Image (cartoon, rainbow, N blue to C red; front, side, top):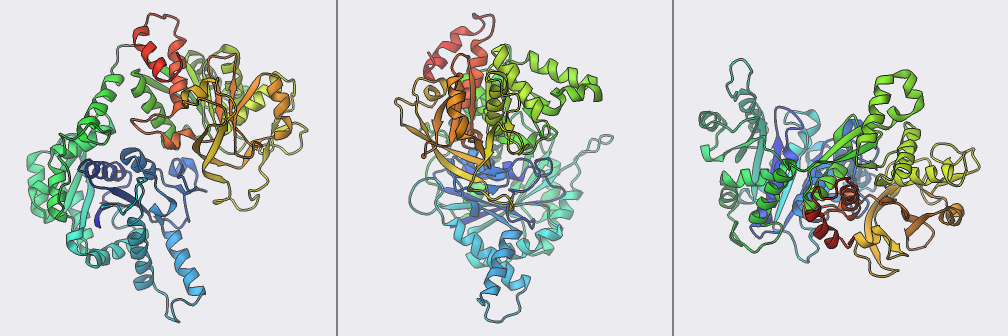
Length: 584
């Protein structure tokens, strides 16, 4: 087993996750089996209870693990399915150590950070790195480990010490350290400054870890003089200083690293035997030749002369785009697949509410103007009652105006509430999440989940959704040929459509086209007399991949394209894509 560790210096959010994902993708392109581990030095057991405003989205894995969004990048770049143990947190490590101490497994020793916590970290890394994540038997060849946070943070110290010991535990020939650091440019001088990186590397070396490769983040390509200066002061060869400047899309990062000979540098450092030719391999999605086509296509779609498809994202956490990172990426994957430029217009759901009109007329009118000019509407997941009435208004507008609508998790529940209020006449229809006193709670708390403990107690992970209708648009998008066929998608919810009202709602025209294995839990809704009005209880965004887009997102964008008033506007491109997705 070979280990590639990615650390970061100077500041957080510098791009370690993308660099780690890109490095793993390059190694996969060389024929190696790759797995990934993300170390998050916070005391939370997992990311499940963290605020989206503070931490970004919570990414959900097949086994129900609620993890850092970087694991989503790993899955998308490497096309693997990770598990909850691929995300190590301080909380998990300390919890494990304390449980062992309570069971007497430390044999009366005084439990300390060194050696007990550091040993737990090393054992965890070794155990998880040998787990297959690509669906094949046998162990991976390479494990890419991203150390979250910044060198020097007090929270990271136990992990840095554990990695210092780990390099000798596995052998230095099996351990490669990549350090990501910022190269700022002062506006007045215009010179690339190396001092922050020098200081960061010096601090890392003082802690017992010496970088083999220095990955330099910058706005512009790294100058040769800058490389020479870093090599001189940071104890690395000039060839081992890699520039990672801003590029037009993240799919170009592996190509940028490949152009600077990173694959050969890693192969030499880890004494690997390259399994395949890096560029001239068979045309599979994870060979760099195919990856380059995809990256170029992303640029081409972004600069397309065709009128863009505008999707209104009506959400609760629009102040931080990372809160809906996987949804944004899924829309991006779908737009690449159908070759259309995409523009996402963010709308804070509470800005659509009538009460907001008196508070801020400008924001209220701007939100509604944005909603009216969009081609399609997407309401993503969320928790709590803030902005719910705004979401309901967005769903009503989509239904009555005929604009394509996709509701995810809460977005599906919102669509059911809106339909019950305005079509069935149940004006007091609501969700038990928002009120428990009304007679018509069409969305209710699931009986098997906890009402007192928030972390890890929802219906989580990959679950089957069984189609009872193979003629619906969403079933055609999924390639369903007959009733009874199932799909596996990831879930994260505490509430469900109330089964008591399902028959009445269906009789009124809103169809539940897929249910869970018991037949009691509603998974997908579709309005038959609408171009595209779909809601899903699961989160399809978590399984979307750059070259395998998620069907509900493709359906949303294709429906927007079909609705364009000028049918000759790109129609020759549209017809074969409709056939590809069974919508002809």
